Amino acid sequence: MRRAGPIRRFSNQRAVAATRKRLTATACIAVTLILLLYVPAHATQTADGRYEALAQRFFESGFRESPSSATAVGVHAYDAQLDDMSAAAIAAHLRRERRALRLLGRMNARTLSRDTGLDRTLLMNTIDDDILLTDTLAQWKHNPDMYTGIASGALYSLIERKFAPPGTRMRSAIARERAIPRLFAQARANLGSVDAATKDVAYEDAVGSIGFVQHDVPLAFGGVKDAGLRSQLRASTANASQALRRYAAFIKKIEPRGTYAIGADAYRKRLQYEDAVTLPLADYLAVGERALARTRAQFIAATKRVDPRKSSRAVYAGLTSTIRRRAISWRPRPATSCVYARL
Image (tube, rainbow, N blue to C red; front, top):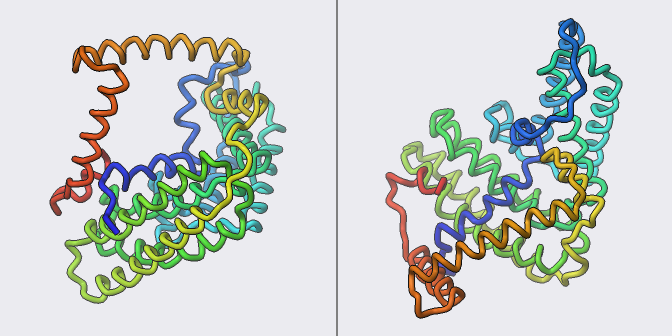
């Protein structure tokens, strides 16, 4: 089988970003969230302290629950572990989130300092968003790409940054690769209906991840001279690659059903929880349509500069074909093995 080029091999990173449990989502919405109650200047330190203790417990338990998320945000106590995505673990995850939400809801926002009140609102929105995704929409039952993203993201975060000696990170990668077959067994047990579009993306990402595991993970640890570790990595990589092949084959055989559309109510809630957008959906759509019209005009103008004799569609097709050929033929040099992954 031909090894996928870097564009395809790293296409699964969009799934990695989408499936990191919402533990890091608060930083993305902080700049847009303005719906806070007024916080008096005499807010007590004790009230802030209670919130901070609760939030710390919530995130610490979340890191234990999702080792891949912990590594991604720089918590390295669980680097040798992989997320448990069994139905029982997901049920426990939802119970933990609902309990935290109840405790946060009982706090009087007016007794908190302004910054802490903002943190509380952000955290509650983040939890509400995850409950919507995990319980109401049950994406773990309908999106095979979640599991590919967890597997590839758990390995990628070990080679993305040099936070520990290569041998230490290599041991963690070996442990996580050994756990990948269990993760995909859980995926097969969990998944129900999958729509056609989601199936296609999930299959492409699973195939792309095979090249990442087979080639890029060993390449990232090429400087480790320990013969025993190198032997263990070869075995764990072969095992993980085979698990990915089987999972890709499983996805390919899925008979698609349903739709990826989540409905107006869920979409409205996601806008509120993630971006603090409370516009009516019709107004929000109008904003997007105006932006689309501007972008389309810019695109047409750009293609005319490339070749005024061809249609915009023909120019675009030619460019994407050229990029694809170059990507497939491109081979990294060992010295750049940990750099091109970020491109």
